[in-house]
Length: 451
Image 1 (tube, rainbow, N blue to C red):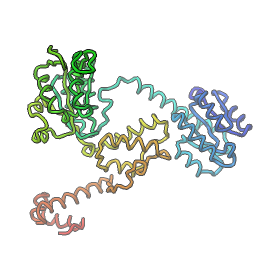
Image 2 (image 1 turned 60 degrees about the horizontal axis):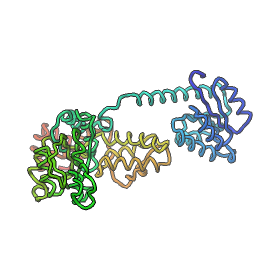
Image 3 (image 1 turned 180 degrees about the horizontal axis):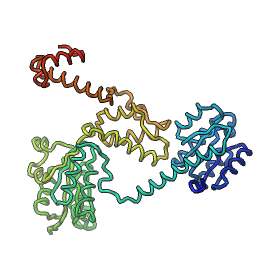
């Protein structure tokens, strides 16, 4: 055990039991605390790998309230510490409650030093493995796609498109609803490009007033207008030899669209108040959540500019069309925010996962991230529920996992669809399904589908 654990904190108010446990773990670096306050002080000073915690601590030595509060305080301050709760004989209710609140294990009194030693050894071994894993993860070179969490075929296709476009200098347009991760794709493009050592300069065309946007983009000469006390470079010039990201390009005023088009064609700019043409070597990436063709028909976006910025297109699909991604993203956000806010929340309830999988996510990844973050902060136990996500009022359909149930579900849907397309004509429906009429009759009776 001495090779496995170096630091153990024993929280016990009985002096005799304190001495017994200290003697049992004499090969380790042991600290002892007799109440919650001294335990938290030792936690800060000693940084133990494992803690043994008696739930009956003063001033509630006959109860468990102080012990449970100590458990919560320890795990909120040191979530990676393994806490073994020591309970009274046959007190399994509190033991289960402690596990539910984040304890690693429990042990019943009277204490058997050998058995408790095995539990501590196991906890210490796991704690060290987790430490080594975190160190190895931190040493692994960061992938350009590290920000992008996805398993769906739709997003994997997007990743392949990004990989192909990144080494080029083609002007790229990224389309997608708000919250789908368009900015993440731009950063990946930059990281994979030949311009990664230079700046990625972003400007949101919808966030800056029209009268200031031109000077932000193109810069100005000293004295060009009141307050122009010095010559200032614009975003385009600042991005020289790097990448310029024009977010929400659909909101670019018409008055500036012609000037941007000239820059894209000639690759030179003139500052406001200037007469000198300044060449700029920059790759331009644009993004918008709007339908640019619709804006063109309304006369709000130049068609020639559209074709200039659309040399290549990347479409970021909405989260509702990314099968499997909501659950994977939710778990990644849970891990990140639990560590960030030092919470003991570890997982989602099965029903919460079902809600995450089936909810439409109108706000896409941004909405999912915000809901998980709030749930981590507000959750009472180790498990996030639909109520924590504020999704409990939404009706969802239970989706089975068994192959038989899934097959029957697919058959039922296919038959209903064929009957609809065949206008309830059994001969036509059986042709669409590729089965005989008798087989269709049998399936209609099996699934109680009216005909």
